[in-house]
Length: 307
Image (cartoon, rainbow, N blue to C red; front, side):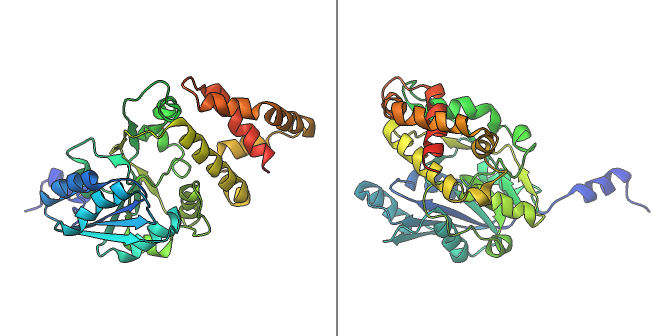
């Protein structure tokens, strides 16, 4: 007797559940014990082997270190304090080598978990190689520049939008990857300072013909640094973009825009504006009334002034 056609369709579309998961969290001056606790709670209700590994990347905040040290005592958890800051790329490669299981779930230490199905969604997904789950933005104060910037960009975080340009819309804050693939395609460890190591990783996957799936399985971004800290972080990222502009060409909207300015006089005028008014723009951005328009202008001027 032949199987019913519907059963054959089921067999063709069935994807075995992922049975092994290493959740890897690089930490830097941020308490992530609540995040780990939530992840362990969710994973413990699934029929899988799992571990949560937290590596401190040279953190100096005593309160964060004290809170994170508790993780070492919890079942299925490992806590690895490291004295030297090695940067966002190398610490993730280190975690990948320390992992034990077939699938790796990388999460940033300042993420939150908004769904009780977060881990289960990844375990039951039909991802073959790499998946980015995205993030949602929590509520914040209107005077906070990071909050205003993230809210303005939030429509671009939807999975269907990200999937249109899958390699450019990849971020390290919340992604799943096969361990063997991660070990064979590590992050570029030339990236020590903040920014763009995830962009180059996406480019490397594209060159290798590896698909990035974009899922609607967001982590939560609910913790916003103050304006001065965000501006400083932005400047660091712009310096990284400048240093690796040859590698990142075609994968940065700002770099594409700058490359499109063919008239030298236009670039000169932007630099002159930044020299004259960049300090004022920075004060506005660090104030209680930051402007996203000023932020865009400041980023452009800062990049051109430092290239």
